[in-house]
Structure formats: structure tokens, C-alpha cells
Length: 101
Image (cartoon, rainbow, N blue to C red; front, side, top):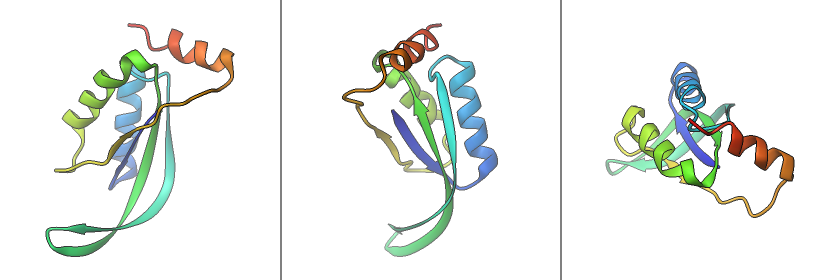
């Protein structure tokens, strides 16, 4: 699973659609608004963001991260990769099959 956040719902939707259309993710979920508080340029900032969670196969992670990084609007984007230790075997097969070019 790969997760990121962006500052606009429309940007989240574009990232999600591009990853699925490009077969870099079998599914992408855009989560509702979250308020993030963080350090940026020596100041504490608070911003409303939208999360995007991408479901992908292990062999597609690097390409997906590269695409997100290339199109992400942030100078230093949060891109987190989480390895899923177990899950429904049928779902894992579905993810694998739908991330083939």
C-alpha cells in the first residue's frame, strides 16, 4: 500500500485516476479531509489535506512512487509505503492481476 496527502480534492482524484489507469495501482481511495499540523520552513503550519491510499503489487511500488513524486504538487511530499503482511488471498490476486500492463 502506498499513501500520500495533497491540498485539494481535485488533485487527489487526478493522482488516483492516473495510477489506476496506468495499472500502477489496482485501486486508489481518496479519503476525506484531514487537518495536518507540521513544521515547514521554520514555522508550524496547519493545512486541510486529502489522503490517497493506493493498493498495488510489490513489484509495482517503485514505479507508482516515481509517478506520484513526478506529479505531486508538494516540494517534499509525504509518500509512505506500507507492506501488508497478510490479507484475503483473493484480494491479493485481484490486486496483482489488475496491476499488469
